[in-house]
Figure (cartoon, rainbow, N blue to C red):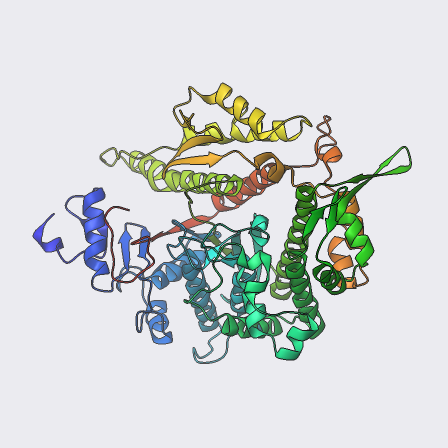
Length: 596
């Protein structure tokens, strides 16, 4: 590297030598000096410092960046947000910011910073003082963050505040330049986390906040105590997260819900449902001519908090009810099947509550869409754990789609533009992930085979694995392990990932028995009844029907459709890219690993 570059440069496009080593060296040199932002041409790289840097995000900093053009001040996420806002009028088209990176790289924080900056600059457009309060709509958009984080984020091995769902926040900007409304689209909440977590991980933040933040009298009313006493919170061996205060988080969530105009009754209904889910997880079963409830206290408490009849809840958990030629057939369940029924109920309750919360937020921030919009995408980062499941497969599929979009704009379109202008350019060697995406989503690809097997009653995870191996063993991007009997691998743009096939079909079918659905519709609480009033059953018979017109969409097919819809929205917008980088895997300060 050129000697002048030893302290690092603001824009790595100016490096005399541009390659992986020089990029890492430059990022490191700047990281040592608290300079966590660096441009790479039109992209900004953000290295997670795992600490607060004084003055970096204060109001005065926002003011400075709002008054300058891109490049006039040192690199900053505010500069990107400001340029994005200016381009609404320079280009007269929608804008979007794509925030990408591994889990734990700082994507969610970057999203919040961009929202905060745009809120401030929006007020400037109305000729209001920067010190005045933001408008009701803008305040509501900002206050949506602690709510969504509490209900949709959790501690994982790599990230203490990992988003377990994806979100696309659209801000509607009027011709005067201020934010007049917004919309949040959520993607693929990790429902399974409600009932089980990997060792060292936690359930969703809101459960711990609930137990830490409720007053003594309120906890008594919900029969609540400490996290160690709840199976859904204690099974992973990780109760506490020292990086956050669960009690303070609870206060923030309640305050945010008040700003979002949740009524006191609605807040109470949500908290009561959460308590009911915790008690559901404590219901245990024994074998006695089929599964029988062994712990009546937990069952009684969950039934009371969910507005259900205890006897009906017992029956729904320990036996399956089906109607054949107008006659009800009752089939006793095994202990494992009863536990699955319990967990299915808990996941359905939480997922529907999460959807309701998002709808409530959207109704509050809704506004006219009569000019242009700025979209901010904060979606789950690429994941590669010791054991990777169906959730990681979908997450990494989404990351492949975003990488394809990134490649198209940064490499393909740039080179096309150079050719049109007759400019001389050196061909850049970049990784085209098109073939990997073909493996995943084309005809007879991984998604197609997973969905096909999901519709066959006799299909198992083993038969699925056989089909995957048979169809794709010779594909360069597919890995058939020599030893592992339950795995298949995919060579993603970010590296090879081995996926455990066990549970894929069950999760993809996302079945929910009619008798469980009917039970929830008989709740004496209107809130729970309303959550499930318009939910269609997803029993095995419907999911497995052979006629494609009658098949209910699987989880992966729905996700694929929503992902393609998202990509269409992004493709019609002018993009900005924020690449978040994790300096180490230990989540510690002042540690930059060159091995990552």
